[in-house]
Image (cartoon, rainbow, N blue to C red):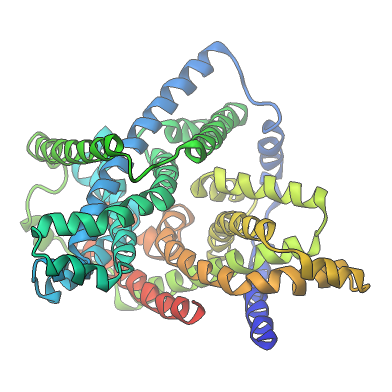
Length: 500
């Protein structure tokens, strides 16, 4: 057993080797001209702009962000529950539906889940133009698929004996389904659904950088004007929103046996479904396509994308994913292990929070002030952002872990770093790697964000093709991008199963 733990521990640090080629290219591409701007950006964090005008703007922008994020979350969690139910095996068993039905739905959801919400947003903006509703729809499309996967996985944990017991009394099928799935659905909502609201708000901010609205738009405009004091005012206000929402979510308690609460949930659920359908129909029939008037335009458009260039873009996207994943996996345990004291941990937690807070495109744009666009810079940006997320999980697990082995090793005179490595982290390495495999799925989809800004991979080609209305190229790029994400998800699923 100790040997296995050591292997998992070693695997957690091994990916840091990607920093060798990455660092070499970054050093070669560095230029000193933008260091003054970067210094001003950092200093402005301690001196944000505060006056009556910007406070009013912050409030209005935060209201837009909360509105888009909340409705995106509400719709995606509701439809996610529906698709999660109808794609589960328990649904097919109760209604005697062939398993082929659920497999088709899962395959369809896998495809739309494989494309990041920013890609959906850019695509829909190109078709419909900039619209407040585009942000909600762009977030909902992949989020529904992600949520449905989680709900379906939880429904698979239902004891088959419970199904047989209910089936024997010949109860109505709908009542049987509701009886079996109610507690798993509510528990999933408690444990996962609330977290998705924070994710929805973050996605709204990122889409705002591309013009959707909300505080993300103000952040991007401030960066374009190099008004860093104003930019940090928006960032700190966003930080306050995220912190307060986290505190509120922790205080919320759900009682699955409360009848009034159950009726409230069902009412909100059906109202959301009906409102979403009506609004979607209104949106479709009251918005004209701006640049995609008919399906024939897709067939008439030509593609100048050569096979060699296309394969190069695919390879860049795969390498970008691997480099970013390597940083996200190995950087947190390496930094925490080296700087293993209370004051350093506080600094690391603050830095990790800033990496999670600052949108990925903004991190990349800031780094571009003193470094040329490259695959390494895009990988560093994406890796650092996700390292901030994986470090939060690692800190939480380490803080909740039994520390008797760590204390015992220190009392035997073993160094503090070795005691931390073998007495604490080695017990978390397996579960940490399992989470990182899930995180790598997200990293693959997020390559589109840094690709658009950093001139690398399929994300950049998608932006170029959309700008020239080359819809055939757009289709090819989306298929390739989706295929990479799906294959990556399958591989990561196999790895995760071996770790659990």
